[in-house]
Length: 105
Image 1 (cartoon, rainbow, N blue to C red):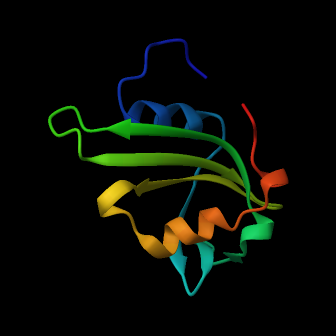
Image 2 (image 1 turned 135 degrees about the vertical axis):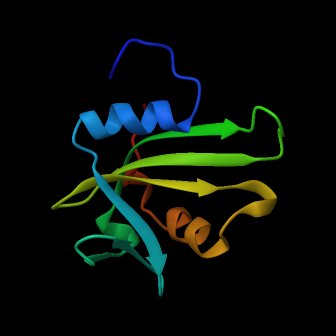
């Protein structure tokens, strides 16, 4: 990761993309789907490498979380709202990821 200070989600996304975390995902029918390849992953197939939480600079109620994830065949990120604006289906998916698949870093 670069040593320059990170101020927002874009800074983190750029660094992770430079490290090969290039896939983007969305939630569909209780699966995480790679936007490009259309491959689907269940919670047990996903490893959370890191997560970063943010609050809006102009509106502290704008809350987001960046998940950095790996599967058996790809690496990528998921940027999601949390708090009152959370996507409940996405939040439920991430709650179902087994504890042993979540990095403690």
